[in-house]
Length: 142
Image (cartoon, rainbow, N blue to C red; front, top):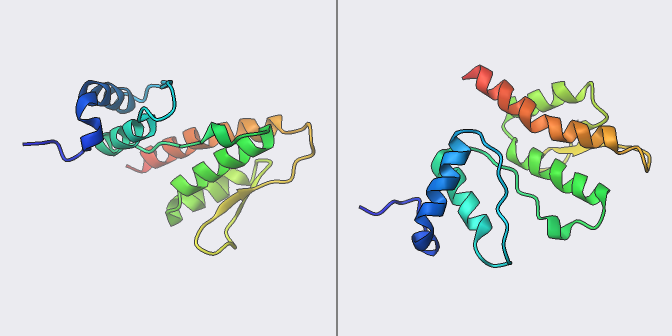
């Protein structure tokens, strides 16, 4: 019986899909590189679905500055964690951080900040720490 998680575009990448699933299931870090159009995103999305894990997607080609990268990272985090209990965790966590959770926008919450130019390092460190904090907090509830 065919695997419902393998899209036709991944038929010839079953080994790659299995390797990525194993890395995700074992909470390992990895980087996939290659020329545009080879299916990296499709591979990651399908592996994450098959392994039942979350991932953050940031299109680095759209980044033209550090502040733009941080905005894309923040949006990826807030898009990935929209459940009310997750937003409550983000809000509680943000009380001690150089950013805040804006829940006044229609349809979604968004991480916001006001940091002077050249002072972005603390904000960047906070954004990088947030997914790990959320993963640990959610796992502790399970």
